[in-house]
Amino acid sequence: MMTSLNTGNVTFMIITTLLVFIMTPGLAFFYGGLVDKKNSLTMMFYTFISIGVVTLMWFFGGFSMVFGSDLSGVIGNPMEYFMLNNIDYTVSKSHGDNIPFLMFFMYQLMFAIITAPLMTGAFANRLNPFAWIKLLILWMLLIYFPVAHWVWGGGFLSQLGFVDYAGGTVIHTTAGFSSLIAIMILGRRAVTQKKESSNVNLMLVGTTLLLFGWFGFNAGGALAADDVAAIAFTNTGLAASVALVVWVLISYYHKKKLSFVELATGAIAGLATITPASGYVSPQGAVVIGLLAAVGCYFFVEVLKRFNVDDALGVWGVHGMGGFMGTIYIGIFAIKSVNNIEASMEQFFIQLFGVVAVAAYSMLITWAIMKVVKGGVSADIQSKGLDEEYFSK
Image (cartoon, rainbow, N blue to C red; front, side):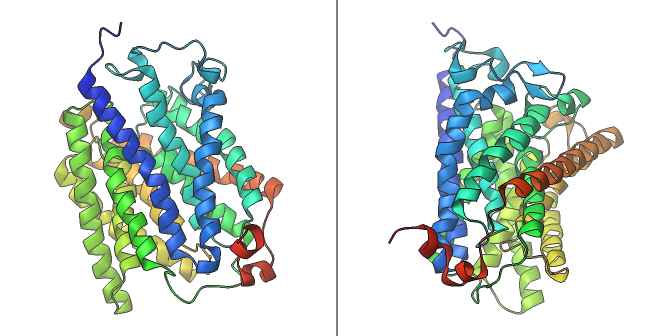
């Protein structure tokens, strides 16, 4: 009998888990609507295939590598929860005070599923689907599982006092900086699209699902329907809204045209940046972070363009630098009364060290993975579209 079970918290976690899950098809629709129609199926395939692949990896040792007993601060014991053996089906105090172990398992799975596909927007139209599956598997094994353990599973970064509330480092920094290396290895697209979005409606559906799901993405980090969840929920909406408005203003001043793509990108930049700090800062702090997210991420997206680096959908500038900046902002804006983390010079440098270490590690390992995987497509295939080459009619 689950004597310490809180049914309200279980219900809350089921809802937030579903909200995080809906972000994965949301990401597929968002990316699928942005690229040329001839590559839309391929872009959506990248994301949807991760649902199956990562779920199997999570079951066959991935969860254990993140949350198993710590091995020298580097990785969790991969056999501890392998195939969900030796687990307690009731409440596990180390994985949520009032929710079943399996609820925590499933909630964390949704984070694992969506992380690697974030990269695909950067190298759109340049990687064949089979190479993507290889990249996905190796990337999860060598980057996501270890980094998630360092931060959330009791690894060396958490032992130093490093914090990341909902994945600014574990998810956005790893994917964003990995994507930067991937596009440098794959090179520029042989064919660039003329429109910023081939299907605005599909892109907006994806944006809506991402915005909707992100409330669960951040609020669920509390693992309970409590005051911290309410703060994270509120901070999520505030940062996204401020970043959306500021980004649109900057974009209009810069390009003298309004754009739904820019509007959506601004909101996502705010969400990526507030994510690591959402459970540690006040609503006032979230407003400032939203403002800084719009200015900072817009700047970094434009920087890559100036250096002629072909990040097709701005992944590094929005997710990579958004997560990077948001992680550091914990050391500047965190308030102890919110969630026992207080901004200080010491915390700032702990955050800076941790996020730089993760970014550097992600880039190095991705470089090695890409050298093994390869998988770039020819100019001819890019010209006719990956969908025609790899998918049946």
